[in-house]
Amino acid sequence: MRNVAIGVVVLILVIGICVGGGSMVVGNGPAYLPAVHVTWGGDQKIADGARPAAPERAPMIAELNRIAETQQAQQPVPSTSAHMHDLLRQAAAMMAGSEAMGALRDMQDARGRLRDLSAAIADRLLAGQDAKDLVEQRTKAAAQLTHATEDFATRLNGLGVKMTPEQAELIGIAPNGDDMVALLGMQSNVARFVAQLRDTVEQNRGNPDVLKRYYGLNVVLCEMVETLQADVRDRIRQRYLPRLEGIEKENLELQKKAADSMKQVPAPEQQGYAANLKALQATAEIIPVYRNYLSQQGDQLDDAARHTRTLLDLAANTASTMENTVEVLDMMNASNRDFGAVINLMPPGTLPLDSDLLRQEFERLSRKLNEPTS
Image: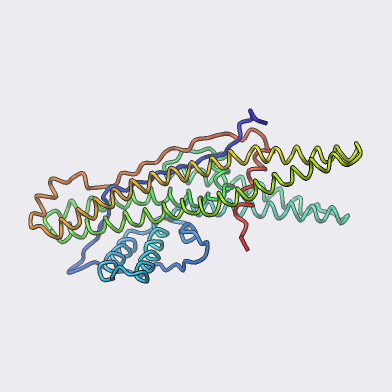
């Protein structure tokens, strides 16, 4: 299988936020709205808290304002740093919401139902029972999965990623597909969010308080983006790659056991061990490609995080300058480059899975990578 093209839709997102963000100022200060609270813990992803719809502008601004004011009021000690980290994760989950995330969850649920029905049919048949009703249910479930997959591809297209249903399906299979969709959702929502704010700020160029608030929130926006980037990258390196290494080690041990046993049994039994060994070797050839798929994402996210940190430094410097100068309007006119967001999204590269067997093996490995650890 060395020459077989094995792969998956590699959804590599490089999200860099140039100075962008803002606040709607009402009266003497921002209009605060109830924040969305998410309890973080264990291996929970930021993507888990992403809603199946894009966030509304006013609650998002209120959340960014809350983080900015909390940050200014706190001392940089471990307990307050942990609190700020939770607030940033909460804000990132809000900004990662999208209809694509809802469609992804629908597709994953449909795939789970199909898998459960297939297992139930097998149990019935092994028990010598009729499974006609379950077969009919499985047919309907397969149609629902097809519809859900097509809807997911449509929602991804709405986020600016052109993708066929076949490619979109692999995102749902991948262990970090929800992470990738969260990043896509953030990219789309930040672009929309900043476009709206740009109009508001332009209409209030004579109000220095609006301008100062705008640039102050840029800092929070960059920190929020960096938080999601790091969350996705760290899970790749701290969870998925180590678990893939464990699967590879187990595979090698099973290969050795099968090869040793094959030497010690009569010819008829040797054929069974030979078939087992062939299957294990097929998995062994997929694992390096899977490792490259994950490592490539981690490296791209490293680059994205470095870019975000550079922009964060610029945002912080600009915000500090705005707070310490009376020449706000002159500075504003000389800093039009600070408006808006620059979001670099590398389009997904495709390494087609050219057989059902390879696709099933990729899905099996993905499920193992997502199994809970003891």
